[in-house]
Image 1 (tube, rainbow, N blue to C red):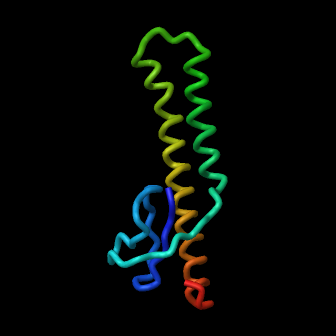
Image 2: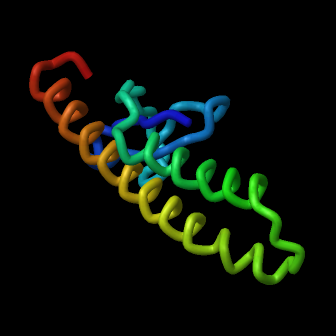
Length: 105
């Protein structure tokens, strides 16, 4: 996953790694912005792996009970990963604006 900033429409787009670097809003060429992943990203991974580990290490024979145990972990992991993505996009927008203002974009 990569983030790109478009100075024309002042927007950040998230793209797949092999996608060409173009803005999703206006379709023009955009500049790649490299941002470190925030703690929310790593916490989401930990929560989901923790829930999976609990299911792996405990004996719960009923499949519907297993899903009910895993559901809160998946929900909280999704919440954290979405929050982390929003933080990354906000940081990329700030950095893209700074580069555009400085004449580097």
